[in-house]
Amino acid sequence: MATKWTLGGDAADPQRLARFWAAALGYVIEPGFDSPDVAGLVDPDGVGPAICFLRVPEPKTAKNRLHLDIRVAGPGDRDAASAARMRTKAAELVALGATQVREDIYGDQLGHIVMLDPEGNEFCVG
Image (cartoon, rainbow, N blue to C red; front, side):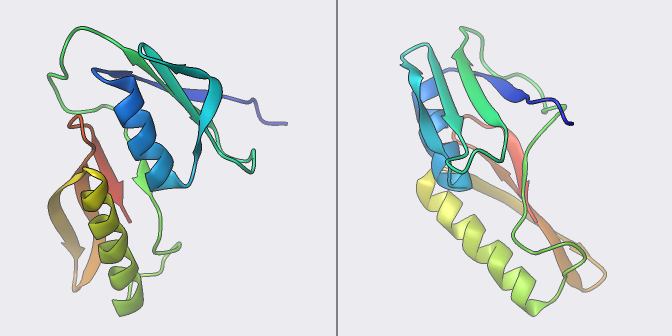
């Protein structure tokens, strides 16, 4: 049996990041973890891991050593339809406050889209 785990992250504004990632992932804010200094979100179906953000005073200064990938293309699925799904999701995330950095192309197919969340943390849509 797998061990339950939570992904934790530092944030200047935990509430803002929690709202962004809840919308990006289809999660909900976790009751009891919604103060100015900490915010948590959970998969409403109870399947995915919880995510928690803790307020810290220092800003982000380097590239993430670990990041989330939002998968909308499907495993091994790299065609025009999967590229359209990735671009649609990226546009939705930009509307929520993300920044699109670049599209990485492998051969002649879109592999993934590199993005930044509202606090500059790197993630990919693939």
